[in-house]
Length: 240
Image (cartoon, rainbow, N blue to C red; front, side, top):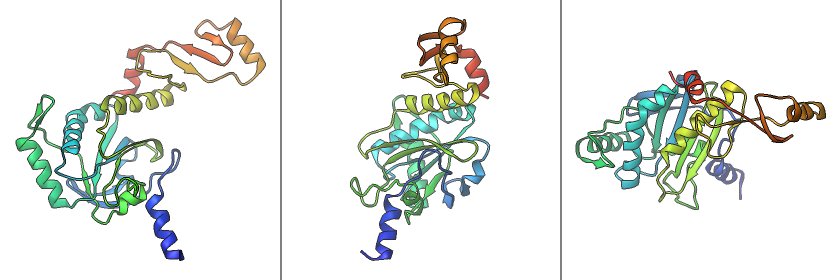
């Protein structure tokens, strides 16, 4: 394999990791040209890909994202979609969704967030959305959570056949913002109003103090301590 072939292969399989800065790109979208992620600095962003326009699973997902867009916006989060189809295909598909499609009680849904044209697959390759084992030219269902400082904070990948769980996408967004605001971790299945986790003690003295003197913590053992954080307090800090 020569150098050029190796470089192309690495580009195809590469993807940002959690903690990396989101790769930069300029793109044409259904809402005009964007410079990503600089245009979104200061807010959270969910960048997500789908395999193709005019496909049923993707249609159900776009309707759901559009239906929930205001809810995400209230959590200081913008939505940006991507597929490797062209701009005119995007426009025709979104018009069809609004004019003809009804799903899960939703109809007359207008998609207002940007949908990126990526015929060259340049953006999809930068973000590792093309998985050759799944498909050579269609992007898998990737979800990138990017924070206000343009850092990748979480990544979820789904195969072409599996529609996303939007409750989990929203829950993950709120949980990460809660961790940032209150310097805590969130346990399995956490939702606002449930107890949060305090980082493990860093010394024997702190561990002993937590187990014997702390009134606001509930410690199962020195390394497993939780505390209450009520729902209203969380939502007041996270939602706009």
